Image 1 (cartoon, rainbow, N blue to C red):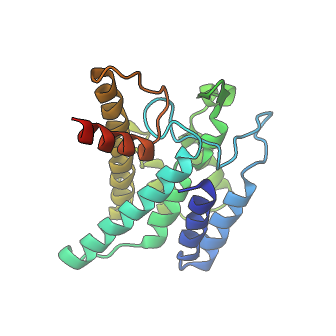
Image 2: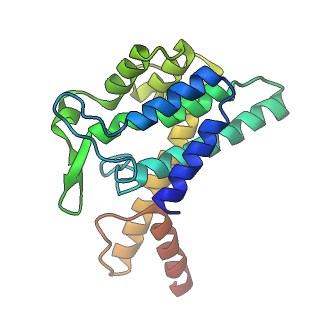
Length: 216
């Protein structure tokens, strides 16, 4: 899927936020991407990776991760409501999954064919940057919490609401799925005597895996 298609999906998900005030705030913060922070200029959303060597560490990786995480979270929300008769606020979930990694655009910069931490990213992590901005913009506390708790025990806060837990699980599932697939394919290529690329997308990894399966 192209970065334009992924960005279109993000905008469609924003349109599904039922609370008008929250929807407007999310649109405004997305629109503000590109403004410099201190003296640092961000990557574009289309360019930014979601990680450095861990998962989605390539151009468009951030958008790919955002869309996949939202789709996982909505599926988990449907399950919770239909199977367990729970109630889930999807406004919180969609908003937090769009926002939780958004300020990674400030934390990475291009280096040769890949990416590395920016000077700002070495000083301040993306959690600190985005949560500070959400508070400044007056986002509801439940969205701030779900954004902050997205990384679970590996982040600055653990989930204290059902919505925050779903956000964390969706983020974890997609990041783990992506990293396991790409690492596994790179190892399989090495075993087959083929030098793997330093950076590989999840889509390309799955295509390679299919070819290796046919050959094996």
